[in-house]
Length: 274
Image (cartoon, rainbow, N blue to C red; front, side, top):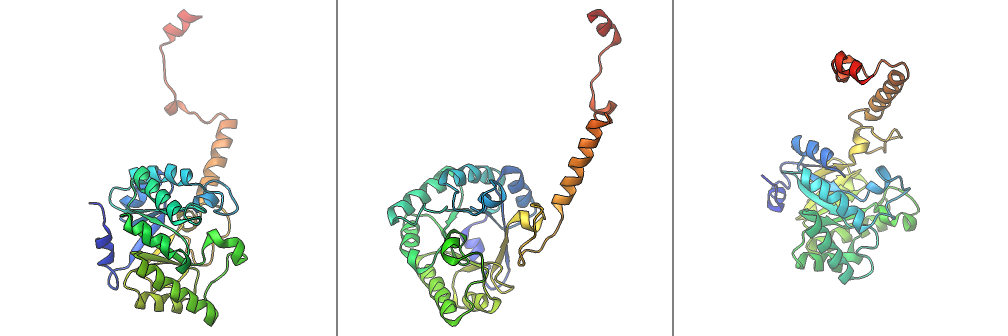
């Protein structure tokens, strides 16, 4: 049975929520079968699938394309789709229109957008249009150029106060959950204790209402160094690399395909064809 916002909100302060990214049908289906509560179709697909240096080149069409596939694979998990760079920043009207497109065309249950108080009017308008919203504060990858890179946020008193204000503004605007990315654990704990909505941490410590990871990071899929906050549960890159090497060798020495991979025909027919 499909999880709802109320199922998730009822778990605040009691039962932590699990969330992973997915960008295609088979991955979403597997995550769903594992019982993970939420799936994020993140604009991180720009980095981990499309080979971009950051998320800025990802389009609404990209998110819809991958969001559709994920929603077909998720029977029970609650699916959230990211709003990409410049799909909501220009105006409230752009934000509502693009959020509506994403929800209608993918079949997801909510959208997520980055930014705090400066985008509270977008969040409010999207929610008033009947579209659930997840906020995202702390490290916001779409602002990588203004932040000067991927750095821990909220370490100074001024920055920590700004993040607290952003969380309050997003909650007041109607977001039902807020992603807290790459910030000190104690700050994320304080936000979680004060907020009446869910907090979903990524690099924000143990005390959030839930956790989210990019699935390629937790599976060691990219073959690159994993970020500090992502625990690697498997070495999928290593497994795949060895399998590809073995396949190459067997093609070259003709041990693949073997008898079990081929189809037979009677010798009489072959003789008749000669």
